[in-house]
Length: 193
Image (cartoon, rainbow, N blue to C red; front, top):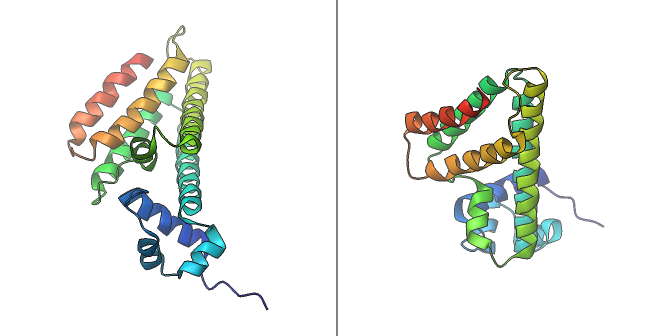
């Protein structure tokens, strides 16, 4: 008779995501996962595979949650410059209020595992393209609506926005100067004037 799982897989995956995000891949042991997730080793292996497979699933989960969240946020904001300002302000507030100062799981993983892990490198490259695409689509909507002067290199600005967003997550790990971070955002957004 098959065993019945007594836990919610998505909830456990999110707990694993948060532990890997806080500690990193290398510093997180299977025993750490057992303790943090509240399930035994056999359940981890049966449901998620080994530590690496669980990490990859947690990493994919983070990427999906982040991208979907930003996409939904921007869909509600018809004024592009104002929408971006609100997005970055929310990101800064979230990063600064995080008592663990985790930063960004993708950035943390990049600095921990790249170079050296081709599978992670591919996922990180896909992540960058996906986020730049979200920003580019949003900028193109604003351009079509005549919200800023024509002739701007929207692809380059989308890349810059992605870089700034990730940079804020790094800087916020050591600085909680919200005003200085927002001044940087405002300066970048002058490109849309």
